[in-house]
Length: 73
Image (cartoon, rainbow, N blue to C red; front, side, top):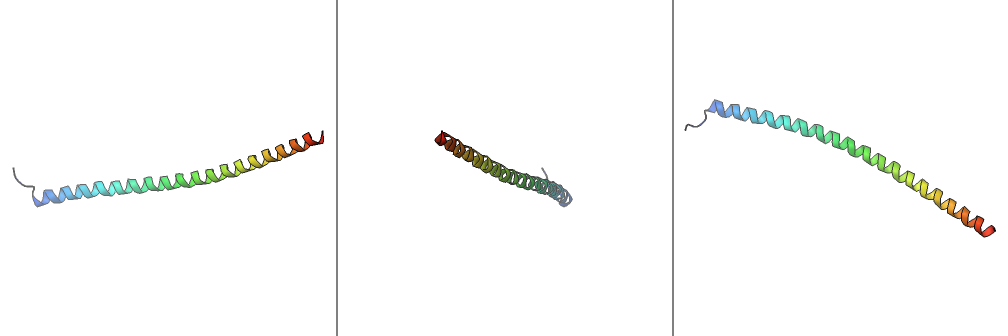
């Protein structure tokens, strides 16, 4: 069994480098996509928190009015 020639070693190294560059590109794209998704989720969370706070406030107002009506009767 003979050792690979220098040209074969360089070709193998070049192929491996191309694989790594492709992986790096794919991971960079995936990272960008995940950051975009995270940003969207953070915005959605903020909207939902605001919506929840508005609903809570309205329910509290209704309870206060009902108690007021109950006491006036």
